[in-house]
Image (cartoon, rainbow, N blue to C red; front, side, top):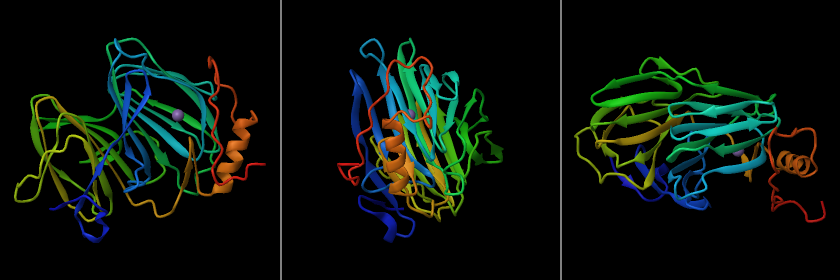
Length: 309
Ligand code: MN
């Protein structure tokens, strides 16, 4: 196995190491963006991945994201520490706690707010899944998954967030072949993971460092501050985690189409995004009010739209 800094698509199985983009969403509230980046737009249908925190809530206002819309995607929240209150324009109101997943299917259109609640720390991951063209414009939905399949071996506790893995199946509503897996090693551990050869994968360390080994058990440098992309074709992956270490594995069959993204909108065409932008800015019934929201976020205009629209 070799690790490449550049686009690995010539490498036939080589991994790609992608630097995270850091952003501050508020006072003391840091996120590290793994997707999309210039080097890599998607992993399967996963098209957005922010590692959120860990945020010390004694030194931060926490998370307060006011009403904003989404289209043609699913927003996927995985909580490691802390609690977030989700409310949406369908009337859903749901607190998400550690070990749980919230999944909002935007389809034709939905709006939501996200507020962190009290506690010491906020830590999790926020992802988007692009809906395939035949489902992109579907009716919106919201699902909460309070319990997910969990199992342990070789010191590693697995929590299956989406899809199937090692004979387990997550209940998560999906529209394309995907997997999402949290690996946590309270006292450290090393495991060999079976991979689907038609999937591409991404690995994000969320706590401590992750060691990735080749079949001869030779390690590259441990990964702490990067996102690792693996192209399809791999059969196994050997990972090690130090005591307390944790990482997120995402994967999926390559999406096989292009998507447009602007602000919080995803679509298969720029025209669809233009209409969603106009509908949001004009307060269309496409995006009903979110109960309890104090205000609506303003969308920046898509740069390709003419100024006089
Ligand atoms: Mn959102």
